[in-house]
Image (cartoon, rainbow, N blue to C red; front, side, top):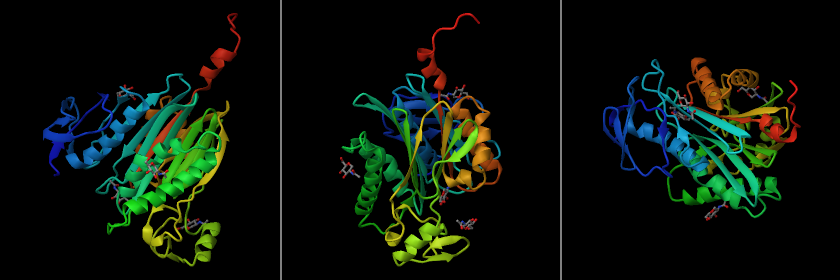
Length: 361
Ligand SMILES: *[C@@H]1O[C@H](CO)[C@@H](O)[C@H](O)[C@H]1NC(C)=O
Ligand SMILES: *[C@@H]1O[C@H](CO)[C@@H](O)[C@H](O)[C@H]1NC(C)=O
Ligand SMILES: *[C@@H]1O[C@H](CO)[C@@H](O)[C@H](O)[C@H]1NC(C)=O
Ligand SMILES: CC(=O)N[C@H]1CO[C@H](CO)[C@@H](O)[C@@H]1O
């Protein structure tokens, strides 16, 4: 199953709605949904097909759900990462008000448990964009389930436009219950974080479960829009203890001495204590709001919020910013999965229409 393929693909333009099949044909040559894909000349890279597939699935899905024909970059330019690599891509909204980029780095360990999802759509005349990072633990099933279902179900919630916070909260918890039900007869106990940002018109809702994090740049200043769910947060410890649980030190603070976060999707065995109820913060998208960074703890463990904002600010394109962040986290020694999304808000575009023409300059 793990055939070795030397792969270096750039600028993979795809209109594929979903990834039906990726197969490895030979060095630098594979088939995707029956189409031949050849690695461009340049850097070649030994990637196991199965690993590559995980990353490619995320990317192709994301590119396609954002906009058919979106250009998605798959690149692997790091020479010194053993058999690792990273993937990135970007997209700009039709009205030019929003652009985003993502970057995902496999890290030093064996398998990828980070997933992400981006959707952009119009509901009853309102433009809606959704961004999410799902960092799995104990397996990738919970994170993958969230990617598949969370946003789909959220946008179908009857109160999505009128009471977005309630819709988010209910959908998070119902999706957790659905996942546990779907996994009922397995002997698995996968879990996942979810850090999501939902933009409805000019209102941003950031919801968090677990220790992925959302940070915005407001006039160059880093402001966290989520507070990590760590077991030693005093309110979280209290909640867990009130439910009959314990927080123990085992290398770090852990629920029941096991899990190093206090809320998560999945984690059936700790469910009484480790809930999927999100904390939600709101932010108006005004002139001062420059961009948003969502990332898994692979980034935040080694890159403080302020550094992330000042690094991302150096790059014009959100894809380049996302790549810079994952590269920095890697070079600072992060050994975990690193995935981040950078969303840039373009205010000039809004101004063009509302500012009277000034041709005397
Ligand atoms: C893809 O990568 C190329 C070269 O690295 C870059 O010029 C291009 O802008 C990237 N495309 C997107 C959509 O980010
Ligand atoms: C999501 O949608 C599916 C299919 O429409 C439904 O079965 C499921 O109960 C929904 N889950 C949530 C959390 O709304
Ligand atoms: C929780 O514990 C970690 C060490 O694992 C420490 O760095 C952090 O400051 C603690 N947080 C709180 C809120 O006590
Ligand atoms: C490639 C990589 O870093 N994989 C790791 C992703 O994170 C999970 C959970 O921390 C690890 O189990 C994987 O090995």
